Length: 88
Image 1: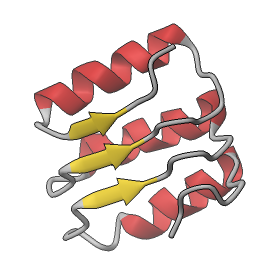
Image 2 (image 1 turned 60 degrees about the horizontal axis):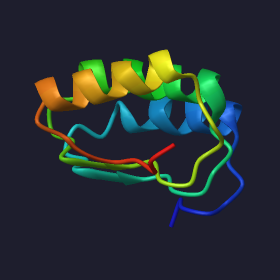
Image 3 (image 1 turned 180 degrees about the vertical axis):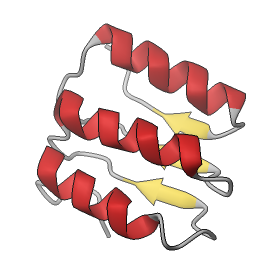
């Protein structure tokens, strides 16, 4: 439902803030949204606190910095989260 909805960084921040109160979330599909670096930072903070997320779909999002991509890959691997990310 959240994929391809033109959700920007502020919207993503609102979504992950709301989701912190839903500890059983297992999948987050954000494909095709212009998330940007600020949105990815919000997602990283969410992932750090979440214990149940299993899949994170970030394919076809606005280009983000390589350092944040690396942070995402490291954190999702540490937490055993399946990360779907378009190759750059």
